[in-house]
Length: 523
Image (cartoon, rainbow, N blue to C red; front, side, top):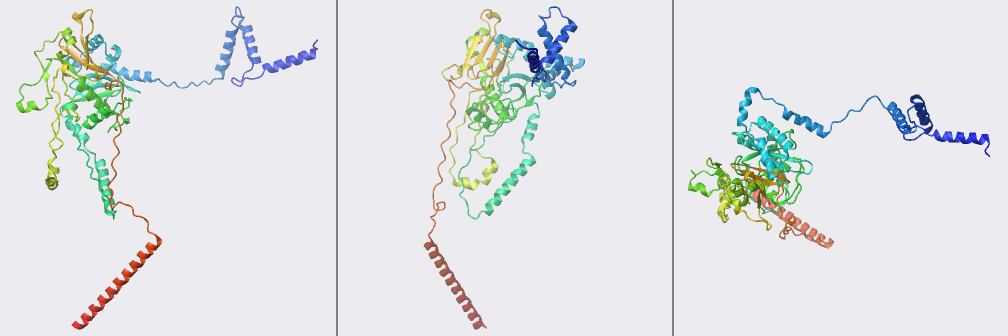
């Protein structure tokens, strides 16, 4: 039987155990139970045994809130809230009532009609996103004063995507672009400094170094703005409401390099394109090159909607035509016929040649200045063979003439609805550029691209093989390393040099003596 002293000791030990503070909240069980019992005595809830857990939670919350500071942290707005705040400006009406009549002749197509046709074709970006995109296009037209603007499509990226708008060059904009592309004075000064340093290094070198006979291939000039692959100007933005960025013109070097690589877009225009073969530019140049390639291969229209000029002469017929006009007599084609035959569709964008241009240029012909300076050397060298001009398919070529790749047809066509073919839309899908679509209904048609910006490469992609290593430099006496001489050989050479020097001194002394004797005889 326990004595009263042992009971008191046990009670004291248990109380000490209950009064141990928690390292996380610095509270103890004894004080917490005391507060809970006091709260129950004060409130006397109905069925206290059922709500004792809630009372305990309320007591803990009250202690926690009491220990908190009265100052609250400033909540950082989420990325979606910031984007919504920027997109809110798209819905603000800033036009005056007097300008409402100008909306009839808008540079933008009918938003509702285009969205409906794309929805019937099973493509597009959804009604809400399409509405925001076209409001952003309207903002672009007003800020840049564009004559015509359309939604080209959307290229997906790893971090963010690109919404692409296509517009026509304004009059005088070509001259502004050329002035911007000219080299700045700072870059010219840097080039002059590099040339001066190179000349100084050449003068300081006592031993001439072997010169390389390699001549880089001639640079293919890019096409003028407003013609060929640079016929249109393109603007991109990441989300509707964000600022539009104008892409630079495309060059043949960019198109040639883009054909040899497969690279997903990151969503950052200034990002470098790390690939093999190396790409000469940033992601903005790579994006512009892919847009040009996709447009040249997938932008189609119903046969007869466009027509080429008939006033061109025979000499101009040999050159690839790059202009067309709308046929006013076009009455439209039945959707069922366009869905069955590819002969009812034509390409209305020029084909890009292997040279990287839409029109071939002869690189063997040098400019007049270079030909005058190097006239003597050219007479000695044999004239190279005249290269054969490269000719692509003419403008408005039928889609039925497109070649198959990887044993698959280049196009797939269908009707939007087989249940109601009377009101269906003809839909065309590209198999070479997944994501490229076109629809046609009567006199109306449109092209759009929604994809990753990569061409179909068959079952698997194999990267290009690195080039063969360069040949070694031709060995000769001027570059062959000599063996180190022995001590005996060095001593023998030294004695021979001393004897030679002594003989030269004796000969000089004798010459001086003879000259002095001749002078005395003359006197």
